[in-house]
Length: 401
Image (cartoon, rainbow, N blue to C red):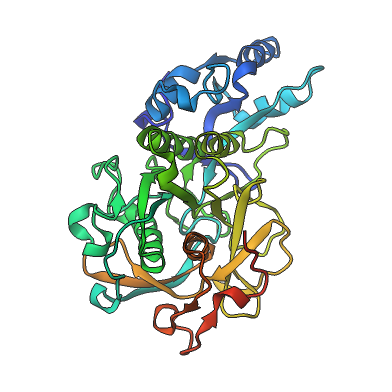
């Protein structure tokens, strides 16, 4: 069977509850993939262990990515049915086995993860940082980034290392979210470069909206792509891990399925990161833009800092069908940062900037503030907040360190 990053297995489907997942793919713990396969077969399921082909292209055969026993970090099974059925079955046998469908993970337009105005004018209106020596690298895993010739000098390959990006795979439209996030980080942390790895959007087909039936949306990526991006960062920086000072994940998903192994693939990606870069390189992730109290991962995982968007010092902002409303009280949120009408590169053309809003972009600001170690006033020209300068350190709910 083909691996999930092959053209025949890219498309995700949507269950009635709005959960996006890779059809037929089931994640299990690597040391339990044999037991899981045998248990499922006894239950009448058609199942195949595809761990090696599924992870081979994404991760390569590299010991830093394997676990302490030299095993792959994750087990992957291929099923002939909806993987939720397999996960549920494994949860209810005499000796339950952790299992999880492989989730779709949202970028812009998915689950309310982006809201804003655009285009915002020519790139010349966006004042880039002064060039200076790079003190370290902020890792960014996102949808894609513009090729070098379409970026201003302060976003050139001198400051944004992205040699693994294949422009044949990451189309210009799919590069918009990642380009924007990276430009915000470069603007606010000019002494730091970016180590970029793409978790490519699902290119198989457009998905239906989880909010409005039939509404076309930009496709999310999926957990295996995020794990693969972590693997590429590990391989690239294994000999100089101290250069990596933080990880920005402006993405997220909610729980999908009843098995206690939910979001196992995303959790594995966090474990691989920690094993190779330690706890001195904090992870920031989008806290979500929905008022729902259903936790958003990876932000809700331990050791990950979930960031909510703020319009001013008055609290969190969420979007319901495009309408802003208060978003306080979501218990997994650990940081709150400016996230309304942030100015950055559109990633649509070489000459266009844009104003965008959402927790994706608040995450980029929180990551930048963490690595600079400074409390700063958000420039009114950057945020477009009625000429109101906001002391980032005083925003309600912000936690340092």
